[in-house]
Image (cartoon, rainbow, N blue to C red; front, side, top):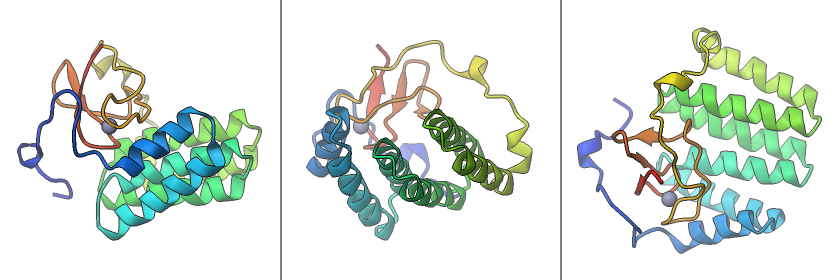
Length: 182
Ligand SMILES: [Zn+2]
């Protein structure tokens, strides 16, 4: 009940024309390794999306968090991650929370921020104690490969983080356009 039914979404194939230039720009900054500018850009986009009630705000906060992590700013990273997770929780998406939080935990651990990783683990338990026990349903995911980035907005795509439309296409979590598997 929290999400728009799929048939209300414009189903766009190929390159979507109406992707916000600021989103493309932020994704390009991230891809170029300009994490300081990318973090600021994602945070601004996330704020704007949150104010307008756009569900992609969660994804944008997570991206801002990853940039802050690259900049070795764990406090700001965790702040963004928590905001993103709370937005996913507000959307009633426990599996998405679980996957997103696991990526956060893994990214924090890899950078050596074990205390922050453990903090995120506790948070994940609070959000979805039952979901934590569930193994990632890798086998349930379509056995196709998405492009590494969305052709429309340049956002990084992870096959376990997208909503699959059918066996061959998924919805870009950044811009909502339909991405066809490679
Ligand atoms: Zn996209």
